[in-house]
Image 1 (cartoon, helix red, strand yellow):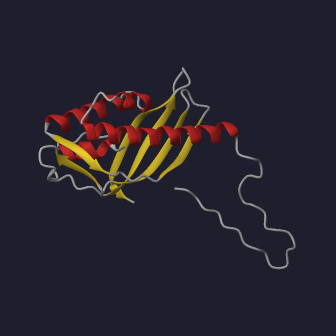
Image 2 (image 1 turned 30 degrees about the vertical axis):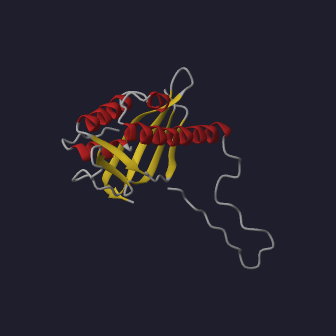
Length: 185
């Protein structure tokens, strides 16, 4: 997945912050046995379950590391490298550096509701795709000097996607991500 770069600081900063199906069951009239589950009868592949769990943990760690790095205006916060790989790591660091150079920082809370949308363990490298509904309405870009909101940086609720990749050393890292401002959630 590719992302577009915008010339405005608020758009760039929102872009870094880089749908569960609910199956219902019902009784069949006249049936003594419970209805058959329409999903696969076999247990889920434990490798897939573990990859999903790990990818979601990496994503949650990334969001927390991002929040701390942005609130401190620290593009070299070592926590970022614990969860991100290039090209996303460099993009995030440049965005935080750009905000810092303009005297801006983030405050507040970024609300996340991620869902794994695809697990590809047989590809090289293995990947897990996550889709999230990010709510940045309470996550403000403010000027450090007076804490006034940076004009044009209003948040919102947008779909965000990331790809978590397993590297040869076994580490799972996010290397791609995008906020889809045209897709509110």
